[in-house]
Length: 210
Image (cartoon, rainbow, N blue to C red; front, side, top):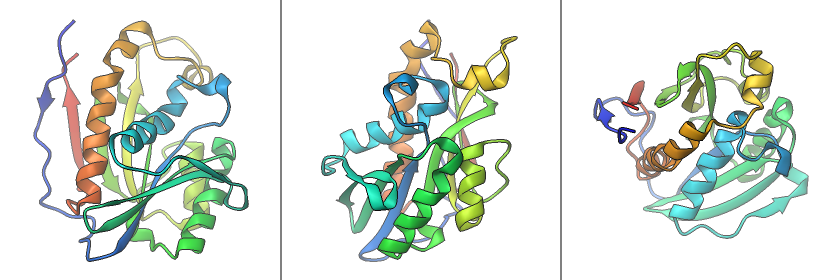
């Protein structure tokens, strides 16, 4: 099986925003809580934020029942980065996001969510700011609670399958996909790390040949 190969190179020509000193960034991994959902396609947002947190010097995850999430924080460069995994189910993710933004007084332009995208092929990661939910219930809930102009890191999970989409997203990744997951999560970590250092998010696609 071929190794991941990057094409094209990531560009920072169009920034989502510019970090100043002591800015606070909110990184949200979208997924469903509970062991039964570990390793499923719909929980790739949780897996990506877990890998990002492991890669940086974050505090241990702590449950914040009043904000309906697991939360951790660290300094990356001159920015304070708060990472969360909502403990609501996917359809209510916006409740946790809104609560954390309100408590820490984080503006919408400092918020980025990372999640699965059924319409993007597996092996592609696309970034942008704003846009519709595209049928993703977690994003739909976020838009209802905070508006749509937040950053997005969308991880493609699309595959040719006769399975019903609702069943497909809640199924675990195939063996071949699981073998490629470390490289994919390494790339999402790089995107979030660049973002935390102030590189910004532009409308880009990071594609891999599999």
